[in-house]
Image (tube, rainbow, N blue to C red):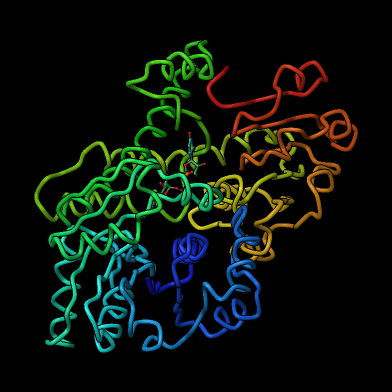
Length: 433
Ligand code: UDX
């Protein structure tokens, strides 16, 4: 089988490497020459746990290659996967489909045999119909079907999730396309459930799933606020809720709000779709508004800790939108730091992987430390914004000696609060007074 993947980002690259590892011949196309050069030199363009080794192995064996040339990738392909970005439109917040439509237009010219065009990018319901129309217009004799194959990979766990999916959802309207997709996904047959649905259902499943998870986080965050006021402990409450298998114990960790390249974008796009179809999705609308409010509120919470000493140093640990990734897109940590910058000129930040990406956003407004311990030197408060394992095991005694005042604001609930208090820290977390 020959698989062409258009787009070598956080979805396209791990997916390509994963299929190559399973024995499929993969060609990845991208528009950015520097990216393709880098990948062809055997260097990765993004950080993803476990990707490096598989990438090198499959580049060396020739199972995966990278090109700028759409024609060489698409001609002869059994499946062409679209994995380009669908970023939010800056004004309407709808998914911006210009890249996916441009890719469809370009690939259409090179379809030279029956090909399945599979949309992996997250796209609004009905986009498959549009792609079909575009390809017909550009190449009326093309023999093809368009299917939707939504991606559920989590950043930081993309390789793990690729090989161990919970489910594979395929939205296909033709038997012929289903046959090709069955072949491509044959290695997963005994591993997870397959759900064959209408293309429009498949497009909706992706948004409905991400919006549901975002709502679940919003719910637990709101419950955490309640616990802070009522004397309950959110960790105990979440545990008690999670033991009910109907609720499940995942995504019940309160924090500074959700972020990343998916949840903010997908909740907004889903809310827009609801408005477009005259079916207001009020739970999603509320989730979006409350999540934005939360980030500002959390920034203020940190600032309040240095009220008596406004020149005091704030040490920020964590900038990525979650642990295990270098990605700062829509990171709550970045938004919270931005909020703090309005009130403080003395902020020093550290993240194990995301420094470069954060620098591009925060510029000279903050100082950058070489380690978590350096960041805390003479600090008046240490703030944890991303749930990196390193931070969990920070040596609190040595931090205490380095800091000017012993205060911790742990917005990810990862520090041993009891120990911090015993050591004399003023310790704040989320969801417990
Ligand atoms: C998400 C979906 O999980 C994945 O299925 C989809 O393909 C892409 O979007 P990702 O963006 O990688 O994946 O991150 P995820 O692990 O889901 O976390 C999203 C945000 O929610 C992060 O900011 C994270 O810190 C936050 N979160 C998650 C919480 O605040 N609490 C939780 O309990 C879980």
